[in-house]
Image (cartoon, rainbow, N blue to C red; front, top):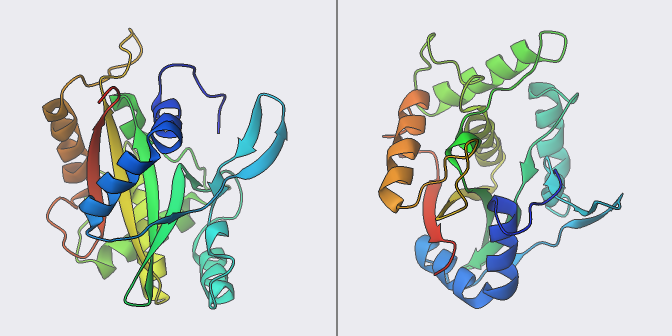
Length: 229
């Protein structure tokens, strides 16, 4: 979690929507997921004076789940425990008919945020990551192209898909909601879509790269939010 920009960037816009426009934000998420309640988890407090709050990391949000130890043990076997883990922009859950479903939020404000590589080395667990992602693809009937490895270009979405698959295998329901902010600040280094169609085109490219655009077994939903409306 880097230092939050003032007035622009996905972290700023998400904080603004969830802090100053919470009712409208919750209404949009409820409508998107067809649920009637949402409970958001708080962030942790940090010790860095520039970043006094800490995002929820890895699988820590599951610590009160009855089978947390089972999930954690599988994760430690399948996924490297060195380096950076998954940092979640927002985590919550909904309860429908006494069944809990986790809601994992990722927010983006410019196209560059879609294109990330793992940065892992063989010593840092790259082969373990490749094996885990290959297992996810196989579980969901997806083929990974040798020319389009999941550890390149769109690795963040790939490792979030891994988490969804892991939770499903452990009997925990979860949905990933990708939020794309429309109308963020434009600069030479930031290509921020000003219309929804631009985002849709880039998101489709990402899903096509990962070969998940037609998958019905991966629970991913996209939400497009205007920064000023």
